[in-house]
Structures are given as structure tokens and as C-alpha cells.
Image 1 (cartoon, rainbow, N blue to C red):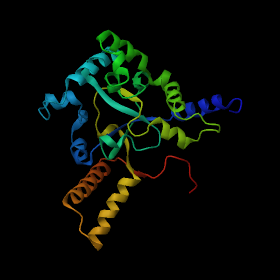
Image 2: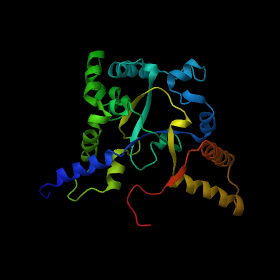
Image 3: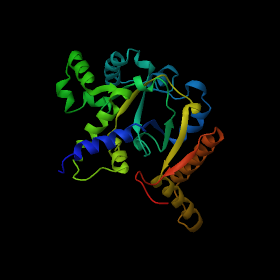
Image 4: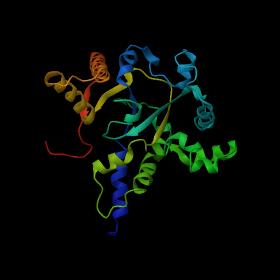
Amino acid sequence: MPAGMPKTNVDTISENASRAKCVVNISSEHVPGFCLGGSNAYLNAYDLVRLGKNPKAVSQTRARVDQVLAGLVGRPAKDIYFVAAELNGTGIRFYGDICLVLKATKALAQSVILESNSYDLVRAPKSAMTPTEEELQREAQHMSGHWGADLSAVAAIKIFAYRQSQRRLTTGQVSDGLLDDEDYIEVLRIGSFSVKDVKEARLSAAGVAQDGRIDERLRSGPIPDAASLKWRHQRRQAERSLVHNGVPVRVVSTTSRTRS
């Protein structure tokens, strides 16, 4: 590897990580309700139980992990809302097809971050090291840091774990490495949020292409199935709700730099 390349790439990661935002993914089905939900519109598992929407939302595993996280943040588990660090992408699509990018808050610098999904504490291979509550707490401490002081370092370690490049990293490579599918940096946000706290919404190019494909089949056949038509309707309702509330909606076609 050329002399100085690791340091150069760490600097590139740090520069880009300084522009990272917090994001959540939500199903388009739930976006209109979120937009109408008031100041605490985004619900965590404890809210779902409290409101009777899903009495089984807090599993034994979730409760065990959250008890440890509550110790990290110094607040009850019911006050913790899970978001992810993102640069230019569309978040964790496993959790929903709409990516909501949150506005930065003054408290963000002090927010606790984890190098990966908090469930990793009780899944292999870490589960072999966390059979007791004391060991679970110790491993959680090892996984954690703070957004302001540690995000750049955590991002660099994460990206270097799978990309030891002989060349300079690009913005797109940093963006892809910061959040890749479900491999992400988890942020423990204290308190819920509303549509007023959303900076923008992002749609994936794949999702937009799927929407367009359904349109094409409506015109030329064969007619799409009911599930596809329902999904298309929900997406368009979601976008209308966001735009009505002043949230820009844009399509992310690439995380890299391109010429216009």
C-alpha cells in the first residue's frame, strides 16, 4: 500500500462522516399517519404496546437489550428511538421503502452510537461473550461511543473492515460503507419526532423503477396484481402527504459523485 494511504483514507472518511445525517426507514403505508401524528408521531416498540397497537412488540430479547442501552444513555428504554447514520443513500430498506432524513439537533453530538445493530449483542458471535448481564453491559460499552466525538473513528473502523484500498476512497465508497443493507451505525435518539423534524425524504431508484413498471403494465398489460397496485397507491399517498407538509422528496440514483 502506498505510504500515507491509510491516513489519507481516514481523512476522507472523517470529512464525509462530518456530513452524515440520522435517518429512519418507514413503510409508505404508515407515512400519512406519521404526518398527522403530532409532535410524537414516530413510534417505538414501547409506544406500540402503550397504545395497544401491538401488545407483543417488546419481546424478551428486545427488553433485555434495551435495559442495557438504557444504562448507556441514562434514560428509560421507552425514551430510546433507533435511527441510523447515513450519508447519501436511502437508509435500511428492510424497515421500509421511504427514507426520512432527520434535521440535526443540538443534542446530536452527545447521542450514543453503536458500531452496529444493538441486537448484535445477543446474536452470534457476540452472544457467546454476553451470557450474563454484566458481560452484556461490558460488551455494549465496547460497541458504543458518541456522535460528536466518535462517529468518524467508528466509520473508519467499519469501512476498513471490508475495504483496505490501495487507492484513495471516494465519497461514494464512504457512503456505501457507512450504511450497507442492514450493516449500519445505530444511533440512540432520545425522544420521538414528527414530520416537522424531517429534512427530506429519499426514494430508492429501484423503488421508483418498480412504480414505473406497474404504470407501464397498467397501460400495456398484463395487469399488475392487487398487491402491486396497493403498494403503488400507498407510495403516492405517502409522497403527497410529505410534500403537503413541506418535506422535499427526491430519488437517490447513486451515492457517488457524477457529472450532470
